[in-house]
Image (tube, rainbow, N blue to C red; front, side, top):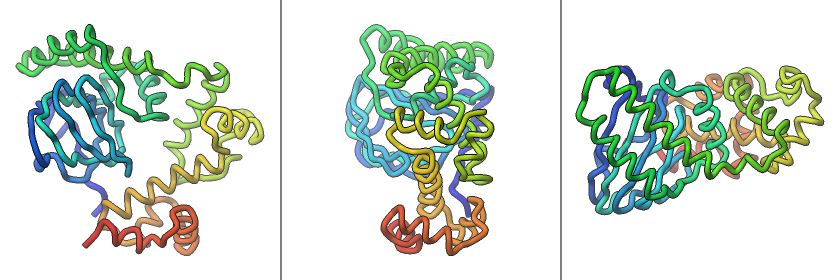
Length: 272
């Protein structure tokens, strides 16, 4: 079995769902490792929530927001006197400008402080959405809430300092990589589609994120390897094929070199 994926269409009419985050102790009803095919926006108004997102444990404090992007493997670990909201939104309701903001956010994926004014706005807006009015109105409220979340992310945008041309190429590259990483992991494949040289793409990535193109691609494919090894029940050969590796031996060598242990040893840490 592959990593479980939650689909917004399975339980949310109109592509929007809002969940209360009122809990304490072990977050038992939210602990299953999974990914979603939608955006998940979180606002914590009280307490503390521990969560894991793509093998990085984060602590969500009161008066912070966070966002989990479609495809990120995550689970909630522990809650302490927690109150807040989780807003689930289908990508069809996220405009292009906000989608680009989410793409930029993916480079830091950190929790962000929310100011009193915007927290008050969400505190008024989200309960109205929660009361389940008509579907068009719920969608309008959700889009308004997403606008507030993206305002905060834009306010903390770490890519604003980049050269505008570098920024444009960086975002186009990451979109191409997300769509094609199981098809090709060659820097030239992406440079050709961006109509630039491999050397220039290396220059941009090194200046932007401190990694060469090959290093960035390797980091992303290894993350996908980890996700499948840890959270799916496919055997390792099946995972190798799923991720575009015809040569299982090469898959194993690449993982072992990057992570420091074999795929089977890594998997043993997550499977009984």
